[in-house]
Length: 453
Image 1 (cartoon, rainbow, N blue to C red):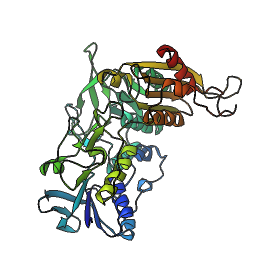
Image 2: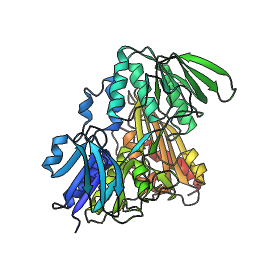
Image 3: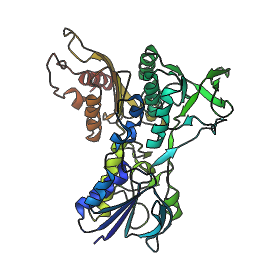
Image 4: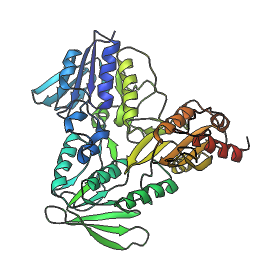
């Protein structure tokens, strides 16, 4: 019988693990430690505290600190674990209440990820920020009233959402993306072009295939030196603040110190039960790597939806249960200046890297029948394996109704449906809501014809 569970990390994964462990096991002693001063909060909501779409920073806190005690879970916030002796089943921590030793029977790592700094000169200046923590968002929010020109380095999800937030607050914003287009981990170039055109129409400046070389200025930024990767031409743009959003890496130092295996993505290696290579040690969330659902290739999660699902499995199993995690499909969605962008499964880039030959069904449809006033354009792409015919990915870009359709594709991937299955999918219909032939069905039909099935 499990008697003592300790969780290191109180983000989405760690908090879920502690809660699920308590739900299954009412008797075990459970403790949770967090190096930040906050209990579990929504990292995905951080950009919206800047724009004001989230009214107060602390509205993002999903688990008020006082609630842990009510669940008989000992929480220690602003407490850093700095040394673990797994043979003795104990670790040392230091925090607001001083230092101490915590014993455990089962240990769960939920240490998350941290921002990575690109090789750019001048990153040590003031008014240069990341956007990973609640304190980062608070610091950035102070810039709204004093900054005029912002440069966001990195055109991924965090970078684009931060850029939108600052633009909505009246700043002149430039996004500098090293790769040929924004949101590379999410959508293909043709879909990215739609998004980029839309963002530019709303006043955002986007510089693709461009490397930030140096941040100029004495103590604070005055400008950023850029280099066009195609022409190698250098230029300088003005800036009085900079956001660096060039990705994250898993925090694994503590886990490595006791011999936990680390995989090719630099994350903690876990099995389907979220167990590491060590007895009585589990891991979940952004600090781990699991498997991409389709090819079983090692893959980092990096999504809140993945973190809570892995946390659930880790917590239940640590408490004596038996649950499994099926793998990472990677369903993502965001909204920029009213445009919904949704993606799941493989992209063109991923399919090429993972050597999966694909057939695509691509259509430009509408969210309503052609005779109904107010329908919005919706670009849909569905991806099928050329070898098996199974659904392996999809992307949607449009002003409405992208998110729920991407969920259908994700479910289809998890249940290994084919182009014929999706074509025969009986969608609902009402002129004010959707057409008799849903754009997903039409995309599947286009792929079905190419597959000749």
